[in-house]
Length: 502
Image (cartoon, rainbow, N blue to C red; front, side):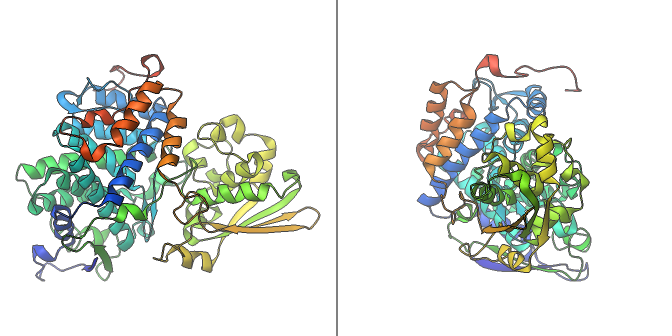
């Protein structure tokens, strides 16, 4: 890997194109890296993962509405929509929108946590949609997805967005554009322009993940993917973009991030180096914000040592700055303690997550968030006894680069009414690569099957799994087989409606 220093340049200073971060991203995307069997295998895992979580969300309001919008944009030879038969095709940017919303809705796919954080699986819907519409093969798709993961994760390793209250899709837009460029084998100049344009239009604030969190949390990455498709199309037609978008005097860094004196160090692969960052990411066993994964597993473990949760006097979760300030009491969001809060808010509440996991000893993407479940008096009582505090040691471990030491968990201290205390801690979730039960191919398949079995016929589930596991050998035109149709009588809004403008 090469580390690139990125800073703001005044208009009087000379910064050649070749010295700009967007150009270096483009060069990495255009570089013909060698095949990597481990990367190809993980790409297959994440396509399976995305399909499962999308199908589990297929009839939720946000997903059905996004699909309805996409249905207004049919295109012969276009891209497929999750839930529909693959003999129907739609414009790639709208397929990216609808499928991206489905993938993100339940907050149940993969994650990377570095200086910034995000869900690199969000790259797959726009890259896959472009691949289907442009008639690419399985090897092309693997290359594009590997680049998408690489660029987003490298940006998350080097540039913190959230400290400046910028949403993480500002890294996703450039990574998806780079991945589409790699998929299509575009020249660095074209990718460079696309990366700059999409960054310019995907810098949004973190209010989408603050307070009363709405369905826009699912739409936001889908929107970035849609804009990435459009940016690449525009760049392929020879159009330019704001430049230098990262380093300019009025650039993203200058006015939205660290300012004119900021310096960032961004790692990117050397020429001909395999794009392996996907192997640094990790998926979720439980449908909740990633920092909640270890909390759920820790609560399960502690539950076996607690006779009566009603006897709990208080619970203190000692954890990292990020967990405390984003999903803990340090966020200062009263909505995180509100039984009437939205599902999107509850899955970003460490206090709610820990309380329900401690009481139930299980977690379900629907039942654990049911309004009646959230409003149970004993749950509300326990929930309000839980607080988080920042622990410098957990913050230090959160920011480590060594995956064996990096930690996203907490130490729980439970005090009972009789004065007894129980203390336990868990550094990473069980499903994490360093956890007690790291996810492998069989786990991805099991997760997919459990999430899809209520809406997808067994023959279609088996067909999809067979197709995706042959991904490196799929020919041009066969990528529509990565779509999974739902039983027609189980799909809400399978046809275009007239409630909106489209």
